[in-house]
Image (cartoon, rainbow, N blue to C red; front, side, top):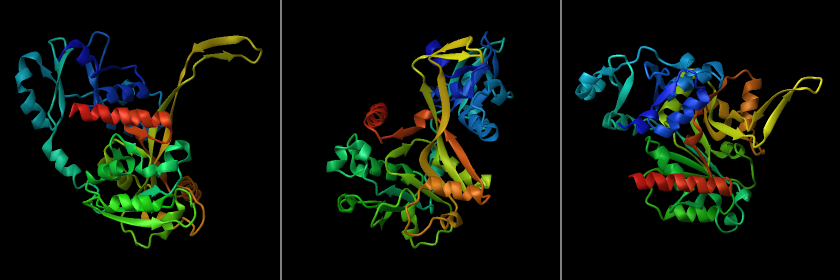
Length: 359
């Protein structure tokens, strides 16, 4: 591994949780190795470590040194050839190679694990997926004057079909699609596809928000349900999301994405007397935002009123008022693709095209 590539997998102990998540996004392997200024190995930090820390502390300014795992597996240069068996023995997907001073000189990445892919295939088997597709998509006008938002293509495949496929890869085979605007076009398109999963339609007579039409589903669900919008694609581990929801005790889990916003000006901080204390040029603000994807226990869905306009955020508020635990599952900024606006749609298409070129 050359020096430039090696840097993608190395972080510093003082980097923030936000910076660590961004760097893990870039290397796309889910891990950083933390080193000091001389390159000496200090620990490891995975996306899961960061997620667990943020759920526990909600502190985006936490440092890598707070979150990292210090007892990290490594190999010396002379043992480089043993890396494959070493990773298999310890069930890890990468291992840093260090010199006699414990400075990182290489990182060996394990090939994709077929067994892990097999587990992925069945993780959402039996989990109902509800996709809200009844809106007019006014932010994408005039595209939506011709096509309903769910059928707008990203590349050569409609966004809704991509969402189906993302869940299906984890074993989901039971989908409910709430429809209203241009619903016949949606039905017509999917009737011509040879679908490997069950698709049931839930028709709205009038707009009922992002939750209202769920009460039209007569099914008595026994397992947590995933509810998501039809214009966002989440590129994260759905199995881990479902596992977290079940183990956390949440009645509802909101999948939330990191969002970084740069203020394009110098921000002035002053004292009460108007004297400037500091100026920070183009500061970056970081928040977790609602992606529009939720995992909800069946009994919580009964709190949605029948025949009334009601959003999933209204349901979250109602549950919290009743003392039901509503939690979040954080994902990185690059894991959330939104086509709700033109610029975001172009970014989504570019990401998907780049990924296709790499295959």
